[in-house]
Amino acid sequence: MESSTPRTTVGTTGTAGMPVTLDAIDRALIHALEIDGRAPFARIAGVIGVSEQTVARRYRRLRGTGVARVVGLANPQRLGLTTWVVRIRSTPDAAFAIAEALARRRDTSWVELTSGGTEISCVARLGSNADADNLLRHTLPRTPKVVDITAQCVLHIAHGGPMSWREKSAWLTPDQVAELDPGHGPLNHDLDTGPSGVTPTEADTRLFEQLARDGRSGYAELASAAGQSESWVRRRMDELRRERLLFFELDADPAALGHRTTAALRMSVPPSHLADVLAKLSLHPEVVFAAATTGATNVIAVACFRDETELYGYLTTRIAALTRVTSVETTTVFRLLKREGAILTTPRPTGAR
Image (cartoon, rainbow, N blue to C red; front, top):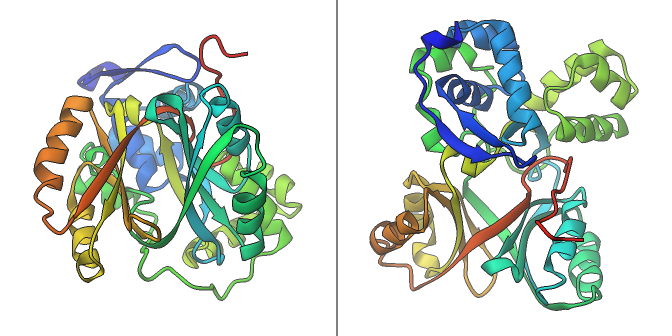
């Protein structure tokens, strides 16, 4: 069955340091899980034309090598959380240890070493002014060897979240996509904001924590984690998804999809042109995240490229064409320690102790 699918391969290295090669079946599976991370393997198999055993085996391989996994995430806007993009400069010998500590926190994601490993970048989703005060004004400033901290509050997300990588959306046909659509509709950053009519409970918190570790956890495992029955978990997950409090995302390694260079672009834009620039950035196929922020720069975009040459071409063409952008600061990711979801392992760099 597998041999009937043309092989279009991309080589990469998983978290275990082993080479990983993705073919057309892997790509189709990745696309399918972006559409519905909880879709039964039997349904995915029927849509992409392989056996259920093949789909299950391929997903175990993707997850086991750290290439891709499904995670269940709480919608921070619905929960009243504030998102911050935090940059920390430290002495080079301390950067990895600080990044590791940030990666272990439940309220962080996208923890990265940038600028050749001398700077740390992360996203923090904090529940109150007290939480922000604790992390940004107490914990980080008191951390030894931290030199400087910059925190920018995310005011508006123009693009990002599930299905934000357009390059990954071409492996299934529109008919196949329709077969896998769970019917909840895409996450809308303009509409799916503000408090929900559903108040999360302690059982929901435990449910979120388990789904952050493994978005495809079975109902028995979820029931055990939440301290509820399986029937309660099924009903509650449907309700949370309808209310946009819970969504599923494929947490994929950009390098596994051929994007070995990830860059953050921090731009300055006059307020009168902010919406227009964000709308144009959102249409760029390279851009996976674009938002308006507070701070000296008021737009941040994250974009993925095959290499630095492609990044240069992007800056000198697409970004150069945005004439209302008055300045651009570009940093590339040196090492990624945490993406979305709970951290499972933190591989140390070669030679680290």
